[in-house]
Image (tube, rainbow, N blue to C red):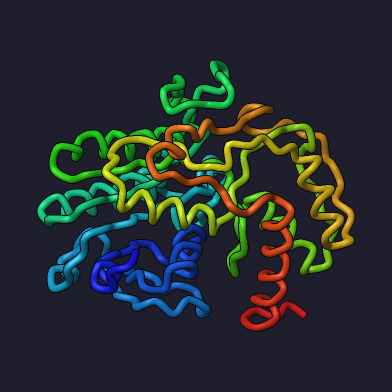
Length: 314
């Protein structure tokens, strides 16, 4: 963006997770808001919101673009109900509390504001793994009723449809995003690097699956370009390439010198998956710039730096 005033009119809600900091780090002009502050290395302007059910604190600000990344992408924990302070709640109630209710309140609030674009996120797991045509297009059949997590994501997508006549909305179906973070997450790349930093033995569930990996900075670029586009609706964002877990782990071994072992366990989701991103390329004239090996090297360098500066484990 060339216009500095226009740059200041972008708001990201949910700066303390994984995707939020990735976008903020790449674009420091974006204002962020949420219950928790972003990581220490993020220097963007932050607006503290005590309760996401009430966004009236934002009334005095003028925003054109809203990027909403509140939610929980940790489907492993949500499926197994690992949240100790929520054991009295059902798995569905917990999933909706993360992936549906905050989005509902945000869309309800911003539908009364004159914003140019609202962006929210879903994921590739929503596609029907038994009826996949690869690379997977946005019109591929979905299967959202398999578990609480997917159902909550599906209801979030339906909110986008419900509010579409009031506000221009893009629902992004993400592939596997990788990159650095100070937080523990179940993502394969981040999990591997964290265990290497902790000097622990590293395992993966299975090396046979193929997935679509996109670096967090490429995702950030795509999101900003989509904000300024005329498109509304659902769209895939990924690399559009299939990468085997075997190749991924061998590349990490080459970068770090650390051996990665294979448990040969059954994996969640299809054994082969990658996005069709032809629609994305056409709409924003974009393609990923960071190939896997470069992205993994960058992630490893940033992980070592951030852990030594902010979270020394030694």
